Image 1: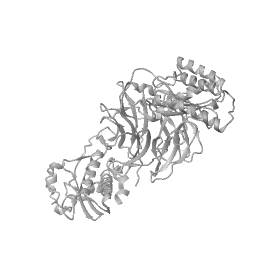
Image 2 (image 1 turned 180 degrees about the horizontal axis):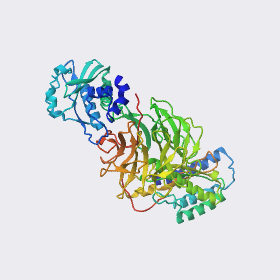
Image 3 (image 1 turned 90 degrees about the vertical axis):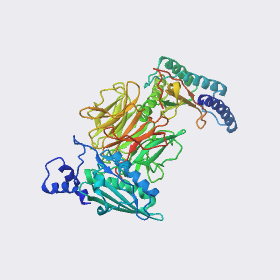
Image 4 (image 1 turned 30 degrees about the vertical axis):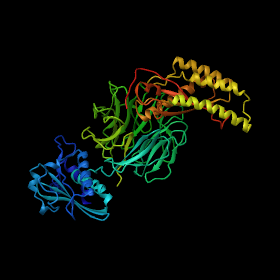
Length: 442
Length: 176
């Protein structure tokens, strides 16, 4: 808790000459990760098998916890999980406490951090003891205890990874967030929600109609989406917990891509009520409709800047679809993608510096790029691996979820770091599109 | 496949509707001869089959213009006829962009017919974007760039089946 309070100062201390008090904090935590610094390198971490405190043998829950920890640390991209085959210590013998750990065994395989987990399973109940060590000093940096049932093991692991990331970087971890996506099954399109590692996949609409374009509400309690349940693409809001969707916008024609501003005061969406697809804003209850664009072209796919002052969108006003940015009142429209001829699906990073989008290249292949809306600098994140589309930023701005056809067959959901590294598949079921990453949920 | 099915459904629904009407003895708003109207609807749908769109375009081509002009005449002869125009797209591009493109295609048809004298209240538009493809793979993907038409009359009697148009264009683009 103290760490949480200190974090803004702590993060700052990495960048500027620290005051003595802050230097003390940094020294105590032996922080080695400076995210975004030019000499950044992944932090080597060892994650041995979770230990069953009762019997000493590996349990199903233990394996799930271990795999979740390794997946999350790998995905986090600031870590390199050392190959378990290289570990010298016997996970069934070496204990959790510092006194029982032979740190030289971990130093010699190159580990800087070590995660130790002890699980106590009694019937259906589960107690978990998670620890994080600095290998060089042999000091315990974090210890967290969690209690619940066996099915909570994975959630405990996500929670602890978030704790470690927060401890080391001062930034909130993303492993307790969720991803909403549309899944095509036969002729229907239903909304599904999953954890960041693809687990707990759950269907949240089952009306047999066409449900599209989910976007999370600001509190993460539900999603806005477009559905044809009344034979017109209307905008609805549905709570994740279940229950009937409520109509947000039912104008004749398009009511698509509803997306809530980060300050929660407005919803931007595309309507065709005036005969052409244009971008509007309104209050979340549907009142106070304001039209922002006025071009005889396609204007669609609004996405908010994190300060809620600007909106990026797709427009074909100059012929081919490109990414544009305007003020939230519709003024000051500027084109930000100057290359390519088919740029769509902008998503503005919660950090503000980048807009991710899908572009089609000269070979008619779709890939994901980012553009800085101010400098217009473009970076390519995917290449030569099928079609990659529909990026959506994690609330940290450090990761992007997207869909890809790289595995052949039906499109799958992948996650990557914002620089395009650590691309990881999180679904097996296939048929997904338009994934949307939730805000922080805890 | 779907084309054949809808054509069959169309024929059946015409027959079904005619009998329903005689049983209920509803008085049509306009007392037109059923046979003449049915023939006109057939012709209307046949003409609509010529409606085509190019990739990422909602422009009304010359051939489409000709077909729509003929249908304006039919709509004028049978004022009880109403249209629902569905705009559809191929799978290239994003879900939301294609919804906008499908809407534009449907609106372009409505606008053309409106300009030629058909009241806008008689034409409803709806876009399905890329969500309801006719073809899902191979060389036929361009067929998905289409409009589908539903003809209704004497409200409460939704007669019709849809007829799709085959669209064309700048080379094919297959992806899954």
